[in-house]
Length: 438
Ligand code: UDX
Image 1 (cartoon, helix red, strand yellow):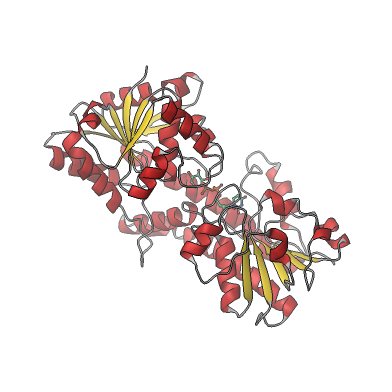
Image 2 (cartoon, protein in one colour; image 1 turned 45 degrees about the horizontal axis):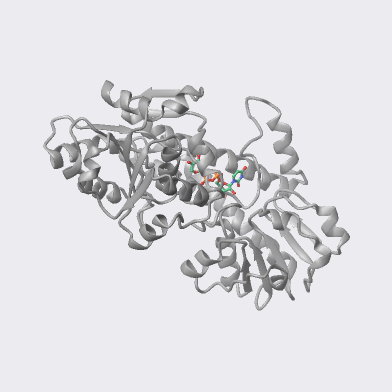
């Protein structure tokens, strides 16, 4: 049955969740205080690159199932569930997550909250946050025990809408039967389609997300650590991953070695987990995550090492970085390994040029010091070396005979190139995690 809901905070998570909820038939009010974002959303544009999302958003607006507002008004009082989807970025100068947007969201909602309605947090938070927010909500509303639940979201950029509509599982942390009942109702079509629905306490639901991301980061850094060993022993880390991945207990997913993980989640979430565990007096339990982070960051240095080894000094050498987004099918450049490599090369004196099919706008905003080039073939012109840092399809499928590079050197930072094809075109190919005989 269609329910009235609000979705507070319309970034990646919120915009996708709002559209997904509208698509399953609910009546959605999206709350987004940023005027520019609000205007864009109201015109059917999410404001970031996510395949299929703008089309679905425009469709739901046209159907009248979704509307956007800068702040709550009386119509929010009609909603049964308020999903909080605001960001929890890394605090500058600390490993911990900044939860101040959550507190603002709670305060903004409180005057319009019905006592029998539910506040469901979806943001990734340090374990213990939900209890603190419940207290804040009780204070702000005067309700003795407000309904607050936690419902972590596991969507991946690039497949966000699909992940929201057909998640591997739904996890809800609740403190009373009413909250569970409302969440079962809002997710009814998904539950009916067989998606596992797990009911837990608040702390477990909060921790599920941190644990899942820590595990994924660990898998990637594990294979990248093996890549470090492969590089000095003549082994091939990609073949190693394939071979160990056949063991079902290990599995072959998230074992692609290369320049490592980035984005708005994995790096920040492992750091926030370390900070929270430290606060709780169990820092040692996840102290290993520091090494997971270090292995990941060392992969960026490895690319600079290879460039320097091949070119001598990087001073005044033109280095083309293919990719700026932290992964393909996204325009998100937060904590992007590609940009970190570009900045390291620039610091070493190289004339860096960055290409990306969709993310260059973000590069110019965040790093105006990095020169960008939109035309792929032009970007190659007289480059001394090329680094493939994000595995966009157009790079994987590029015909090497159509590009001119002064020094014919390419470093495959994602292990996706057809090495023989590039070699036939006269390129020397280097890759992470293996030794290629050119
Ligand atoms: C991640 C989680 O997957 C998702 O469940 C959570 O909700 C948010 O964080 P996302 O940040 O969109 O999603 O990206 P993901 O696909 O997990 O990739 C993260 C990074 O790891 C990317 O930089 C990617 O290039 C890298 N990666 C991924 C590898 O280096 N090797 C792999 O094998 C897989």
